[in-house]
Length: 117
Image (cartoon, rainbow, N blue to C red):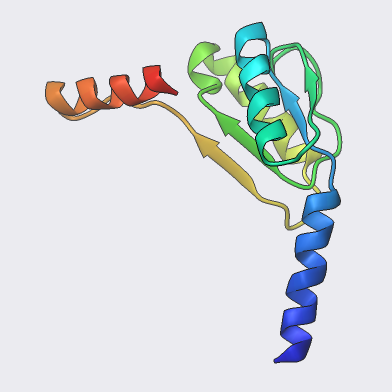
């Protein structure tokens, strides 16, 4: 049991030591990212560009939120290929996108949540 706890502690320390890089073209959103990172004591480097503009580079994890809906299908594919090429083996890719709801009330609730984000 102690071995598992020590391994978990090391993994948490490594995760906290990792560089946090955000690709964000919106200056207003970049300020929000910086503020949220500061509240939890993390430094963040923000690259002021869209995901479609340049390669991601080597990454231990990629989180993509509400990105692909703003680009055409060919660009989506190119971005996803870049993510795949950038991730080290076994690394996670977390994707969150806004999708069409099955009915108007659900869509309104999802839109309100998206706008509040």
